[in-house]
Image 1: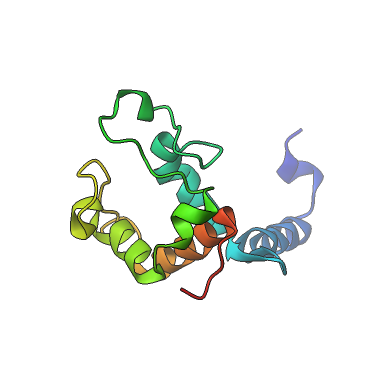
Image 2: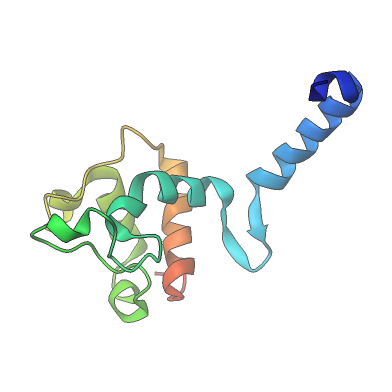
Length: 130
């Protein structure tokens, strides 16, 4: 017997609606990023920047320029939010950094990129008012 046969349709709809609220907003009041930002980071950034956000992703081994360590408060703290936004949207070359950093502006919209900037500020523990 499958899920649909065991649980009435109205209950399935309620569970689905509840899951939308659980997985779409900020993770908690202390975490200023959304699940969407976390999902985007895990989808597009982890390969180079790593699961520990330290620049040691699976692709970094073969890169001539090592990816930025997003967990480094000092290194990340010196970068203004608008520059982080620009490098995500337009790629490393747009801010005179590595050509290996791709532009994600055709993949993520401006709102998603802003959420990702907030997530990076959370990861580095280096503030959000830059």
